[in-house]
Figure 1 (tube, rainbow, N blue to C red):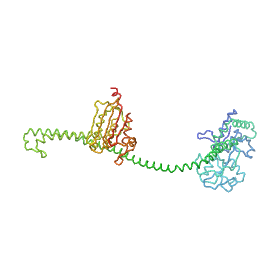
Figure 2: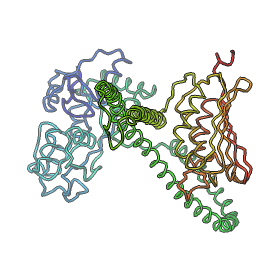
Figure 3: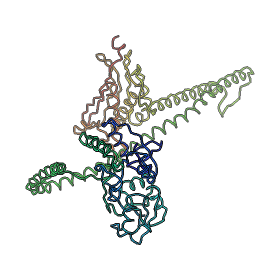
Length: 541
């Protein structure tokens, strides 16, 4: 039967489930295992456990500090730990450095503990404030009462951390050092020898070190052996010497490196300035690109708003035409239309022209509707376009309608020649249409006068479908032709160009497995050739 203090962590204590725990408990169980002993633990107040040992109710104490006074009634095994005793105080309390400096102070001690006995031996016993457990002593100090607690360092630190006593700290960490180990009643040499032998076995096998490190190592600094000190010295000094040697070698070349760096610094500063200018230019161009994206969203919304009244106009025009024809038939049946005038014009003339006017209105409404639909398709975002067979002739017609205003403004000679029975291509009609519109707009912007023309043609060529836009414009200079597909490169910046059109178009064509080639003669014009693979079924046909 082994006695233990119920509240002396981390050495021995009862855990949250009421089970024995701590460094002493694990050490005793390990000794019992290697020595073939059966052990049971009896936990209680320290004074109760001390009395139980003296009365023979228990066989040993697994953790007790050695003193000459205690050796008069107990036999001690060699210590399995050295306990450092400390003084704890509330933050802001004046520091003390020794036990004798506690004279005249209000000191709390763990009743019956070694600090109680030591301070009593020094003549301070009458002024001590005694508590039943170390935790009670620490709580009493944290509550603002009394000046100091004299207690073993590790239990004090452990209890302050576990209880969250953030206003308490050790002000003197080593006011006393006491051997700490097993003790039995005077004369029980056999049990003492077995405990001593078990402890020696644990130290030889390394289990003692593991137990000590697990419970006390995280709280208590360990001294270094000569071997450990030499090993760490080698680990530190060898790299340090290597670093010093490297520093010496480096310093010899430092002057040369500084000179080289100084020579290149001016060029580097100039390059950075150029990079900053380029960055500001790109930021401005990205802002313009964002404006264009926003414009696309706006165009889509406006097109939707236009489509609604256009549909109403088409519906009402049909109804009005039917009503007009009925009214004209009724007037004709009466036969007295001579001299009748409508809108200041003779009835007979209006009888012929009104239906034609309504037909023209309906035709114009359908044209508006078609343009709106083309505009909506063009502006629609298509980040992951579905692949489907696309009629390139239909795409060319839709693109010509969308670019019609720009073409009519730029030229009086726009030609659209579409090859019959053109095979389909596999891709996104909206994306391909975007490319063709961009080519047509670029061609119209390149024309210097309305007398110059633009020609859009399609043809089939070796399993591929070709769309060609040829203009009679100013052409592209040779030094610019290689850069026209670079993002943000443009020769039309003063006219609002962003340099994104051909870059985006080239990316779309590449997505479709095609090519976009430009040839140009300055002063004579430019030809843009879009080549796409025919859809598998069409190519086989």
